[in-house]
Image (cartoon, rainbow, N blue to C red; front, side, top):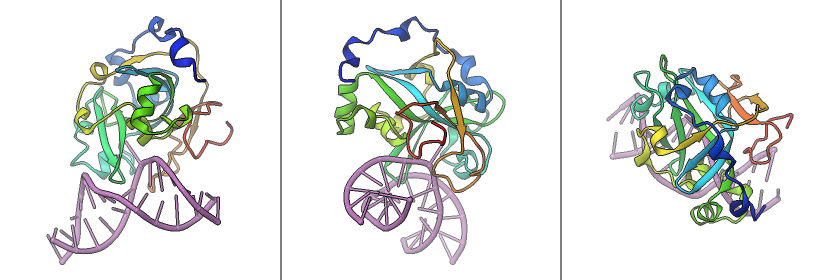
Length: 201
DNA sequence: TGGCCGATATGCT
DNA sequence: GCATATCGGCCAA
């Protein structure tokens, strides 16, 4: 795994870039189709392997934190929404759905390029530990609260997968409300998905 | 202004 | 698998 950052062909550059319409679609659709996309921020590139959808359900910040989740108000879409979880860990979200409140939490990436920079930011060595979990992912990419409210497509390059992706749906992680909704989406068989691993992979 | 809760991460058993 | 550190956001008083 150690040579991937030098030798990997930039398969991503030949892929289609996501446009504004991609994030304007219904939140569940966006959350599912973000899995398998590659995300570039500066020199750091990774494949999205795990997301979660939040709309106007009881666990959503649209309901829980209407004051700070401004990016979720007013049917905006395509904006970055960053918040601190448990005071310390930043979580990176993209707002979605041109017609309703919604956001997708990015929970895990498979690191592809820029691993040394990620290691420096994360203070861990193992590639598998760099972007596994929302707080880890945000730290590895150098996300700050200042990015909240920015346009997703200006802050990142988002590239669509070249081949169909096998996605597993399961309940969302770490929430106390609306736990029954299977709105966590992960790449089948990926070792880079966070804990707890969805059953069946 | 204090207290409670949480879309987490980590380390130890 | 489980405990717990840690602190921002929110609301009650």
